[in-house]
Image (cartoon, rainbow, N blue to C red):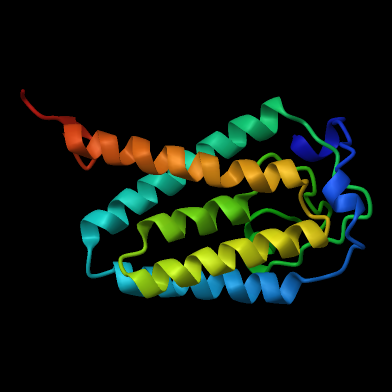
Length: 178
């Protein structure tokens, strides 16, 4: 399991400039307010919502693979991110997972929300929260800067891939006759 295998500790020059601080509550509020806002505005667009769920599933798969193949030790002076949702699904009484690093799940989710948002104001909000949460997560030393910078790229790739599938198939499941 991820938490118990050895990994590499990176020397992140950007994190070295930021004294660690706990931003768990602002990160939680920014992220889940964005999830709620995008969900509410996307609900009347079921095709977009289905695509978003498929994109998120692809991101989770990509994240699982990269965490497996890129084992990292947590950043030096990491302040634990107390996220009630992650605490429920990821952590146990005995183990607080800190090695789920490359790439950031928070930033990839927020980047995807920005991409699937249906109006300009919600997209702008999602962009602002993505940037703020990226800064706060690095300042808290939860992720390396490479984890944060790579996450939007994966989200964009998932977005493009699922949208491509939907041009070729119905809901990405069945191939249409040519």
